[in-house]
Length: 274
Image (cartoon, rainbow, N blue to C red; front, side, top):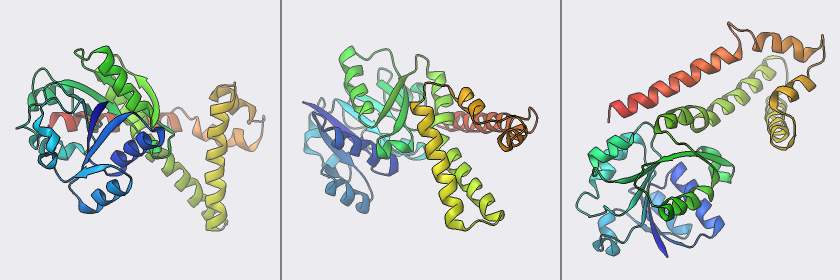
């Protein structure tokens, strides 16, 4: 049975780990979390939980951990990496979900021959509806890749990227994407209130419209463009609204493009500061 170590039990770390529990994967799991309150939650969830790697007796065996997930923020990664400098983990496969930290960063901080995967899940993983894009270094074996894929697919759909340069794009689109969608619901709700609806009704209308539309995108044989055309009657209200949204200068597409480009820029900044 493979041994998996997870650093970090925050929002994403706990979402990942709970997916493993739900799928009842055949791995031994260990959690490292500095915050006592989060350790308590991890323990309650059924994991072997520790404050730091030195507290795990099995670490004395340098080949004990087959896979190490690094679910900490980019700004915390260097401190996390320093915590296991003294341990010989050269045979472990590392999986980082930190935005902006490249393969070269990990090679510099850990070792040149590190087996590393960069993965970018998103928040819906917490309810089993996430999507994760990932890329891998060339020195992973087929079995190692298969094991990591099994772990990733426990909490999300998985997309393999054959070029590391694409991971920042995935970060900006799907990693940060839920934030954009939540803001859309927030904005629609507020506009509804501005137009005289109650807060409760406005939130319900915005939320259920999004949920229903997303469900149609998922289940329909039609693509989003066709679905949009189906709901747009000539001379109707949807067409009037789309005339604004589809403006080539001030419409939604150029705004979203600027949004994504700014997020990609930030991901690259995080890497350059590492």
